[in-house]
Length: 264
Ligand code: ADP
Image (cartoon, rainbow, N blue to C red; front, side, top):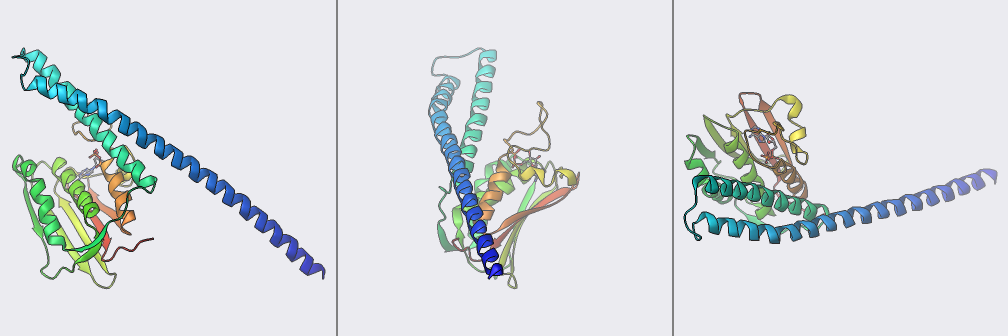
């Protein structure tokens, strides 16, 4: 019938459209993968000479070529700190390109959170010791084991706690973990009494290279890539990161982690 013929044509047209879109998507994917690969190679090629620069700088700083004038030493320290900043940017870009290219594998296992949080705090102990901040953890006694990627969860919490330490001048930092059985979700939060983040910046800080203070004379170091990596890692784990903050009062960053991460 006429109607059947119409439906037939429409279906054929749709199929053709579909095929065209699929080809375009594939092309975009290939272009994106090529870009990621290029960035990954480039980051890698940058690292080798940079490590050599840092190595020689440190040798000079340690006085292997004899004593230096104070100005020489100061200048070398600037070379060293800028070099280390550059290395951090490169390492973080490498992390991002690995994730984007799907070359950051998920290593799932069962593990306990309290030990992991203790490990993170122990790793930051030298930094904590240099502050007057009280850092403590409140962990419920019956926190279930999680099935997830331990190294990635650790990287996220390490980053959130490092940020809390960096942006807090006085008061305390509280690490909390809590299980929500109804959602099968573990919430890990880092709460600080630091400088806080204005509402209009709270979404932006999760984007690549975004920092609240972007002036050339920024008071805080960093690359603006930490949180964007954390967000990508949380997504890989099937979770997300949220922030609650008020300017001048402090911030709470929360990782919402499924108790069991599933492969997609
Ligand atoms: P970085 O710390 O290297 O600048 P991040 O991506 O980790 O990069 O953070 C982006 C920005 O978000 C920071 O520069 C800072 O402006 C803001 N920020 C992150 N954590 C906090 C915090 N705990 N308190 C206040 N501001 C924060």
